[in-house]
Image (cartoon, rainbow, N blue to C red; front, side, top):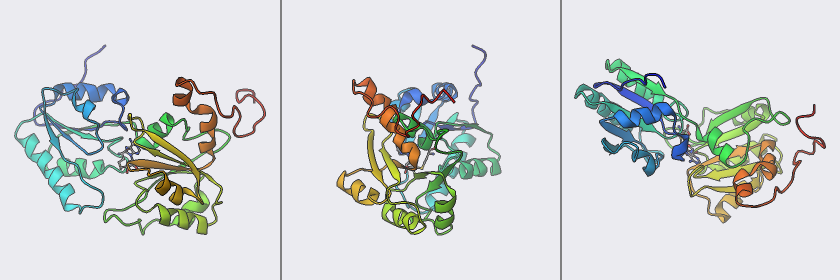
Length: 275
Ligand code: SAH
């Protein structure tokens, strides 16, 4: 098995917890959970994941969307204090710490204060969460690129710095994090920039958890359908034809005994492996 790294006193390991299902933790994450004196975790970290660290103190550092970044600074400085107090500190964040998770800021503050840091990546919701919904984030017949977007900025507004027209024109498949609050504006901007109203969209809520829900809709209807279906954050929006693959790849439905809805949703007319 080899030697696993030791979480030494005075260190902070900044670790991704994946999108929810504890089975999606990495072995490095489990190794860290077993050694930590204190686990500082975010709102999106599932409670069962903390069960892997029964010996540790569990400190909640969740932020509700749109709160000022001063709070972020408090969290970073708290990590510095814990490390300086000689604790083995595990900073656990949902998904991957460096994907829309402010992990870069926290790590930078720690390093600026001379605190030694290790980074443990995790499975990001925009990849693993879609996989649990049966949506391949890339698919040979659909896209050769993916565009990851955040639907709101630090202030909670739609990011003004984003050029939605350029995104609409250039992105093959769009994966939008934190998009629920401004879904109307996002849909309107993409439609105005020429994306078709009938473009397939999936909304995946609480992906990989027992509460996972998936809504299949279109760009034109997405805002209304999300409201009607009472879909709640956290959610990933996926915009693009890869969403159609769910008609054949919804493996959770297949496991539950359903038949595939469509064996060839992209109308390739041939088995995909014969090219
Ligand atoms: N670092 C995280 C993202 C943090 S931003 C990652 O790599 O996944 C928070 C956003 O992530 C949420 O608003 C939502 O868009 C998305 N998200 C995180 N966990 C999710 C889940 N289980 N299901 C759906 N979306 C999720």
